[in-house]
Amino acid sequence: MTNTATDTAPEARTGEDPIGFGELPRLMGLMTGDEKHGPAATSTLDALWVLYDRVLRVSPATATDPGRDRFLLSKGHGPMAYYAVLAAKGFFPVDWLPGFGAYDSPLGHHPDRELVPGAEIGSGSLGHGLPLAVGTALGLRAQGRPDPAVWVLIGDAELDEGSNHEALAFAGAAGLDRLHTLVIDNSSATHGWHGGIASRFEAAGWSATTVDGRDHRALHEAFSAPHPGRPHAVVARVEPKEKQVF
Amino acid sequence: MDTMRERFAAVTSRLLDEDPRLALVLADIGVAGFADAARRHPERVVNVGIREQLLIGVGGGLALTGLRPVMHTFASFLVERPFEQLKLDFGHQGTGGVLVSAGASYDWPSGGFTHMAPGDVALLDTLDGWTVQVPGHPDEAETLLRQAAAAGDDKVYVRLSVQVNGAPRPVGGDGFLTLRQGRRGVVAAVGPMLDNVLAATEGLDVTVLYATTVRPFDARTLRAAAGAADAADVVLVEPYLAGTSTRFANDALADRPHRVLGLGVGRRELRRYGQLDEHLAGHGLDPQGLRARITGFLGG
Image 1 (cartoon, chains in turn yellow, brown):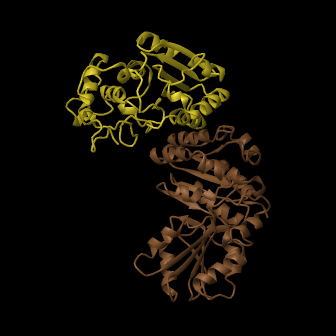
Image 2 (cartoon, rainbow over the protein chains, first blue to last red; image 1 turned 120 degrees about the horizontal axis):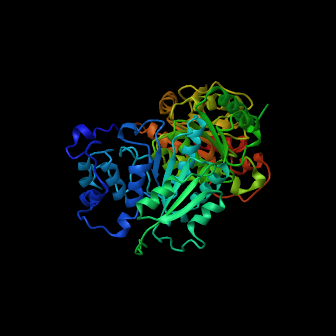
Image 3 (cartoon, helix red, strand yellow; image 1 turned 120 degrees about the vertical axis):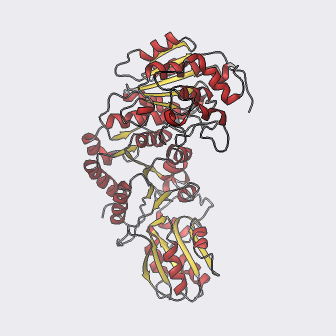
């Protein structure tokens, strides 16, 4: 899908008139009908914003460039913050947001890469993004592209899925130093992670750091930390999620 | 004669030399056959260890970057164990790749049911867009593997087996081959079932079709063969779960009265070890068992 945000959408902005972090609650409100959002809806918001605003080398103009940085949203549930950031950065028009979840909207409650400009993967079922990110990092390396960074966002409860542990063990052993995992930790894993989430990555040979997931400066430093020869994990801790029963 | 698996290793190693887009993902099965290829192409031959979800996930990631992944292990661990990865990491992402399985329905009978995958093709039938290739001879496997590697971004499953026919046929064209023509009905043999079907139908006045590409299903050839017989009576003989292709045959003949008998591997576990021939006989897929059921259905 081509991105035609700038010429079809009155609300879409160009680089000269950027949408700032402070406007994201309003954009999320277009999807939820309420500008006030609980911690669960915004658990990823700060980390996503810092990534897209200051770290990832990808834009609407380079969204299909083979040399772009990749961001894979593995935790596809609760994608309002993701959509708000993508819209703020011009990947698709802001006026798509009110259709969130509607039959004829490209914006589902789990993202579909075939429908959402800028979405690298379709996700929703947990535990698929990290293995796909490992393959993406391998594929870029095999094609002689050492520059693009590959990022994947997972949740602390998503880490329950065994597929993640297949992937993080292999990635550490393979020394995939262009691979980065962002773990949003809102203490939602039913059995917790005794010894801490970062220790799982460190034991597998990753560089890992744990930061305040609301502190933009700390997030940026963690995202930018050098990690030669090793993949890098950033555990971003946010407010504990209220327990939900499905 | 080499085995299909040996041919797979030789052909895929050559294709890795020739096609920079091709990549191979293994999960500790079949690694020895690719030792040289791994030395020549260390970044396009990846062994993830005993991690089958990752096998498919890595293949999906490679495909997202534009490579054409070939993924290989035993059928039970390639299709059944990581089935959701096939559904989501390829189909849902809109990407393609090549699955090449070994082990088939009972290639290692003494290994027992854990290493048997008679349901693999039926399971893939729940997904959209997979081409399914079931070669009956190493030469056919080579032809079909080369086609699969060159098939753009198609999703292709190639099912290798120890069971083979004595001679290769010219496969890889548009559809089923017509090997014999007769009036009493149509018997379609899939891949390695052909030799037993030819022996079972010796002297019978039936048409024998040979299928290696089973998805997409060649409805046109089946319709023509059934139309040329006295009655539209069809027997399918498949080396995996009995009845897997029955609905495709029914759909092909939906506009006329017809009968379809689906023969193949039974659903019930035999809980037997032993040899391949004993399992073929145990499922009624030896020439004697086939002949009895074919003549019972079509009339002697």
